[in-house]
Image (tube, rainbow, N blue to C red; front, side, top):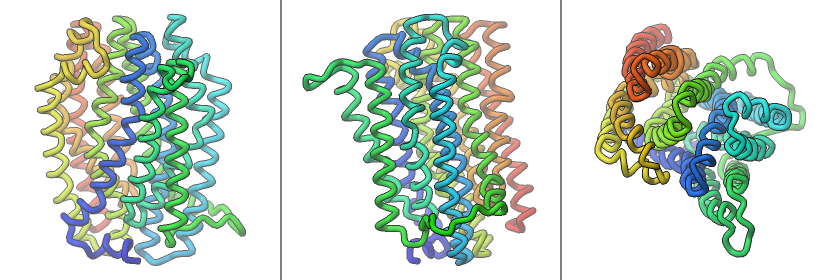
Length: 447
């Protein structure tokens, strides 16, 4: 109960650090999966890097379904724990595991039946298509680690145990980091397997992460337990899970839609533009992880205090997290503006990519401060049980305004001007998030 009570009693700045710091580290480490793959795959060749960039939206979609479902579980678990309804907590956790297994099966079937269709829709280059197909099939057929690991990490986070959640992610990322060069380049007498090895290292790391998360829940989380014997699905529980979870799935999936759509626009200019955008998105994801850590910490804190009827602490969350997120985003902007060439050269960038990518990184980075406000408010409203604010804010900043803007600017003025679409989409999304959050806080009688 000590882990639970701290969300209702610990001074808010200390609680935010206590909860979010392990999550920040966890998410930074988790993002290394794709960063490390891209760094090593880039050494195989630009065709291989382009292939992994084309496959990335499908990986984002798997993450969207697993994270979105587990966010709905997390918010509901935290609220039931705050209300001290422990039988309900067990039912929610068991439902979460069933949903994770269902999501896993869906993507395994898609991996068998739809990989070729996806590859052919985005490239006619035989080398890129072969690499992309290899990578996707392995990641989709062996996706159990993603779904099970994400769910059990959220079980830990729902009681405030973000440290153990971090440990499980670190275990997987370290495994991936060790295996990538061994399998890709054929070290220690093993055959060099290139892109196939990168995908294999990724899924092994995900399975290791899931195994550690399950073990740590068994040992350190007596509050949230899975009980299969006598389990009966509850329609009301499912509705509550997906009231938050479905908008979050859509929110996360929008990243996949955006990357796919922008790739489709950029491929008409050059494969290098696609390879650059894949690198940018992974760099952005990596540097956005501290803000994501803050936001994900907000979900259980807000959910617990809403269940415990402590509205004042919910406002304290926002007053603490929004300035912190803005500070982080300004640091990120400085990094992207000062050392863009060095960031791209981590991925063995060609002269053509540097010419395109250096001004693009500087242009896009101006918008990070607006994105930070949208993200923190969206996560906080999810903790209150309203995932629509997060979904709509993300839809505006990543799809509804961004994709048409990239298309129009690139075709009207050239690809180098397409990045200014980020300015419009991020600013308007932040304005929406502020107004929608104020409305929700008043509706829930927090303001």
